[in-house]
Image (cartoon, rainbow, N blue to C red):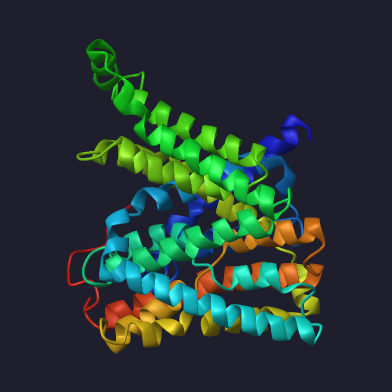
Length: 397
């Protein structure tokens, strides 16, 4: 891959990324999230339609974008929620989803629709919290009564499937996968307490005094933390999303209290550069031909995302949320994409996924991002922000 081709592809992606917020803002009432515009833009400029880009030239930057997506998702996770009712309900709903997913995919394997049920079953239990965060932020839905339920369900639906991938689909086997997972977790725990071991007052002063100068110490250390855990997870044969999510959880412990400036920097570098590259690259890599040849498979997986991952919310949250809010939970928890991309790549590499199912699974994830959050936001607007309990305009990112 020559430098010129890489620069040309990056230029096209940058044009799509810059145009996305403008196009999204021109649509009446902002009904189409920027993420959708980025994915559709990637499909259009990708090799299967206009052919202006070469996805392979952006693989590293795309993986870093995925890493930032999960870093920010892990950072948003409030661990205390799992000691409270929203967290407990999220765990119950996910376990119900797992049981239903195993049953449904077992039937699909028996009739020959899928090759092996494990990657499909894991895919049906996922929720794209990292993908949802920018959409929910722009829509003003990260405040109010519904927010802790969304964040808890999203965290469970993102982190636990990653653990499942690490153990059940590890390239090193399940036992070694479990040991690798424990080792990476131990490294993350060690990194959590590492800053407390620094006792030198001069070092602390230099570190914080230069936090907002040209040194940008906290931002550089955050990126170092992300790359360390990404590299360790990759070296242990685990998916990079696990390392990124753990990096976000660790960062939350690193920087307690007033960290708005660090958060704004992470938003700027993540949402401003790396994360748009991931979404555009996801669109570029979508196997449109396979989907066109077997559109029924995409529809089946899209319906299964709603039925298996989403519908349990209507029952589990019946004593805690109003009907409209439960419908929003159904739609938001059924939204999936990054882990479906990872699962499709793993499934194709190991031969556990049929190529047409891999394409349909990713296509269903793309459609879920394009449709479900927009409907949830429309319901939120229709009910006069009943779910968020605020009339403030959405935050700008």
